[in-house]
Image (cartoon, rainbow, N blue to C red; front, side, top):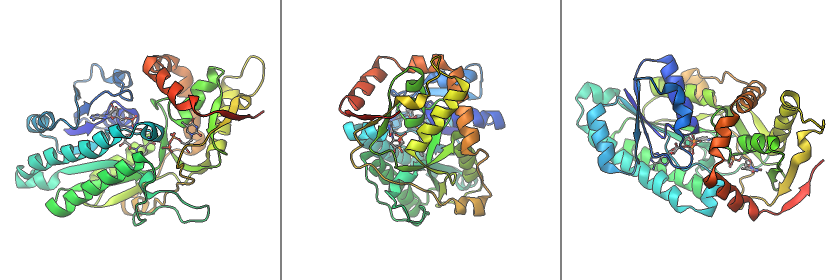
Length: 360
Ligand code: NAD
Ligand code: TYD
């Protein structure tokens, strides 16, 4: 079996479902169920014996050690993290606790387990660390996209904590020989994306008749990848990646935030037009920028394409259509998430950003 950490979050739950749709190998899913972890994401696996869920913290050394001893996974796929940049600005401590200390504790437990395995199992074992392109910092408009050799220059507490975890993983390979793999992926979107992130937030706010908050001038650039393409890249790296290597994963799809918001409004205008015929674009409002906001991310994905033959299956057009359709069909999921704790967060994050302009 494989052990997945953080498998009740956005990407982790998509990964677990994709994995079990394509393979019969069981998954041990260890998740702390923070605000971002949601067992509803995994409802389709409720009766599936191949999915074993454990409610627990990667920072709990004895729990992790006992799970490894009992279930003897052939690989650990590490998704668990605090993942939202704005939250890391308002409260960085949890990011250090989980992303740095938690990854360290997990690595130590895995090292203990791995080093006691019989030789053939030790050789076949993999620790795959799921990371982000944000560790590379911010690009200028004419800079080449991030490659695996770009120097790390993280700018937010989130990206700094992920960079630290990447370095720990690297060191565990270099020093102890732990068979690690690291992926650095661009922005994901798709089903089960928590509506604090740009794309699901815009869909939810648009339908609720609320403002669509665009930070600063909205001309920051991100590379967007449909989540199932990230999952297929992780599976490919797990099976064929060279031990100790890192792989950048991206969709060659750079877009400004404003053009993403426009695409979402246009899609909603088509699929769920407002009764008064006014475009959802009328709800766009420019708000104060994120402190230290990275201007541009772009991924050079040639290494994973060349060495492992991976390519994304979705274009932004096909992925965003699937995503909007999914959110329209899963209003109950969105409403359930938008509970007390979510509302408190929205209040905290947006109260301090005065609305600067309403765009028609
Ligand atoms: P998410 O916030 O949706 O989910 C994180 C999950 O981890 C949640 O289920 C949460 O309960 C769990 N978790 C948090 N702390 C934990 C702990 N101490 N112990 C056990 N479980 C814990 O995040 P996501 O967007 O699914 O991201 C998953 C991983 O992918 C993260 O490592 C993130 O850095 C990375 N990543 C995300 C993106 C993106 O666009 N979302 C892009 C590249 C890489
Ligand atoms: P986000 O989804 O938080 O991902 P990340 O910061 O990890 O890239 O944000 C994507 C982009 O959208 C980022 O440039 C910040 C911007 N953004 C807004 O303009 N308004 C919002 O309300 C949010 C949440 C993000």
